[in-house]
Length: 450
Image 1 (tube, one colour):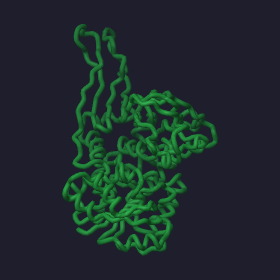
Image 2: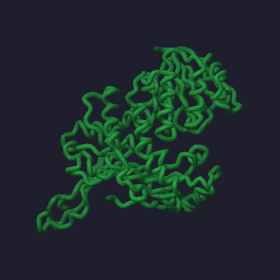
Image 3: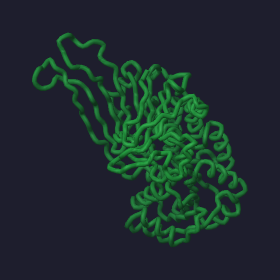
Image 4: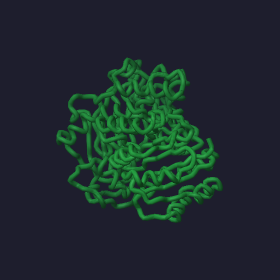
């Protein structure tokens, strides 16, 4: 397959410029997707020259990517109008990939408009998270998508599933006899999956104030990582088997308690200082509706009710404007049943840490330290994971262009992720869990683990 066209709906938006175009540029520079035609579409009154300038800035100086940028087209388009979509598709060459770089509600309206459009044979649809706004909306969107194209041609992309990250976790778990026998409720006390950012809103109110930390990070990215950490070994990394094993554990996942106030937390930042910058409170950020009560920090403790993991609490947490940036999964092991009398200092449990960006592995444990041989000291062994050939968005786009759905989120999994968080979101909307506050640059509140 040589001639392909990528149509980006929402070409003028933040997602396109910040993540999608740089990932595509890296993919082209690496020699993938020969013969690509790139078309941008949005309601903004741009022309080809302005669009090409944006594409060139994102792609850099590579000759192959530069050639694609030189030929890129821009069409002013109302993506909710069938006539506009027909005109847009009339400019495509070869097989077509349509990327919805749009808010969920606009994506759904665009898909409904496409029902009146004859899509070219083999068209692939690419959706960015969140997939819908709840389990019912996700199911409705999934039913709509399968009226347009078969499920195997729907790619719900999550850049956290960029292939190097996936393979790092799978390789650690399933290619090392040292770790895999210990990763169960017999040896693990708790697991934390944390993505605390040292960034504030950064002019993303149009999207973020309607999503919040729970939908933006936990419902999508962090539950996908939980699936990788808890899934049973697949016998192959083929798409069907891999996605089946991940779906198994997500079906078994639920909030830890029937009382969302016990197992969830929501908060938003107030004015403070972060990285030498003075930040206003979230409620005072441009474009924010303070009465909406959007959280910038969310925490959820869940249970995975499988034989391997029953009884182990999993903390999922993400916050903005946090002073101590932290992006990692931490597996805390149970303490030894008994330490012999006479050995001192065994105060910290053993931990396995998997860092994300940079991808890093560390093991914290206790050994006899220097000086008194009866005194135990904590030490850390660390190693860097090898970097992938492509950035995460480049990896997920390669899967789309190669018709490989392995890294895409399947329809049932997208619905399960909403099902897991809905008891919490319902309680939040009803005011049963208070919206707490923390200063920008602080550490933010947290929940005690059961």
